[in-house]
Image (cartoon, rainbow, N blue to C red):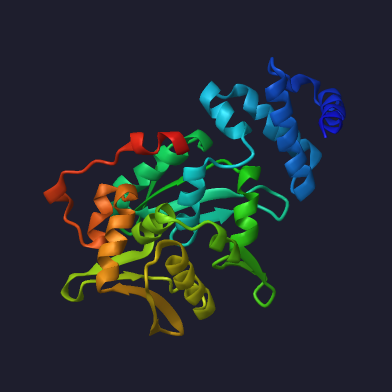
Length: 284
């Protein structure tokens, strides 16, 4: 295997001689990134060259992040929760790389800033604001990058009837769904009903079978029982009640942004909490 890598590296460095950055590890990482793109057949040759050339202009820490062929573990878990809720992946064409897009109302600005901080190594622009009929939204987008191809492949399926990709709950999350993913799912689509001590997760955009599968995965990995209830117009939501509300709180609390603690029935003013980034520094 080592000899095969050396052969490919030789071919790579002759095809792209200007990509050397001074050490063999970076060269090999760039090459591996190139191979991923080629295997997925998502870039034309000139687009691929342009994409990799951009790496040479990055700050060192961004360079290191973007050379990795996978997202850090923590961002992977955040991504799963985001894509199950308000996050989306955009592709400008069938052959382009995806980019993460987060758009929320102005009242959710603290959470959007939190997400921006998490994904900042993959962002080249700032947060933007859009005012339409006095309704203000706040948004950011990552760069288009091959590291997101996997997520687009599992979360989006082509609906031939409308010739459009639709988001699904992928079977692959059964292998990795944890407290971080659930925290971001609740922050995106959760709601606490104080009168009945319920946590509702508005999974309306998914079909019933997907919602049932998500309920199963939550119980399998986190031992949280939830009910799949009919909401309206053939749409279904998840409801967490009883002792499972306390279980959920204890599990997700370390990963919730303080501005969204109300979604699990916690008054942040009583706790004076701030998100502790030191707790996740080894995973991001």
